[in-house]
Length: 291
Image (cartoon, rainbow, N blue to C red; front, side):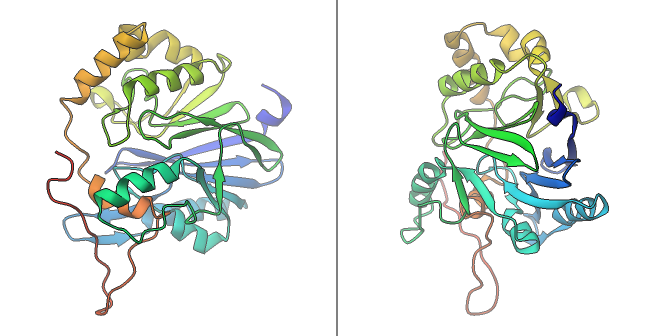
């Protein structure tokens, strides 16, 4: 570990309803930090939204005397609403996502029949291209384009840590599904190979954990641990084998329960729909749109 990576502090916050992990990534030398993939609480049965998860992050940041430099999305999530817009309002820090978000927006604006939706990424302050660099405090960071789960998925490599979103899970859980609109198992395989080309000691932080076998939630492994023990990589040594395994498994999986609720918010940078004439906000989703 180099001197800069030694000052890198990664704190994960687990959201049990969605199995999501949110991160605060800090340079302890400068007290600067980034928030990655924050969750907006949502109860689909009542339609209630809340900011408990996001406020927990803000409380931690305050207690640690940190200053937020970035609010980072790895991709538009299908299983929870993003709290990025709320945190942008609270902190003033810029929101960022990969520049291929525009491909997801163009795809889903058709699914939602939302012709006036601006599919140009303008809902974020910064659109990162593959290979772009930035920093968290003094710690260098770069962007690794890693599609497959979605068209727009990126990995943030910050110091000796990589935030791999829904590309890899913990070794006992394998890899992410690739059957959403725009997904591709073959592209997912290639993205996984790019991640595994990082140094073996690189710490990998996943976007979800579904507690395989009922164990406690976990979210950190290394490149070496993934190479040695990821159940999908051990079972599939070639791209063709992986694609066959991944596509067969995806056929058995139901769509996430919040996908149609979440995408219209998340492709809009975490903004909830504007209130209508009666002061209430409404979500819209297509019937029979994902059969």
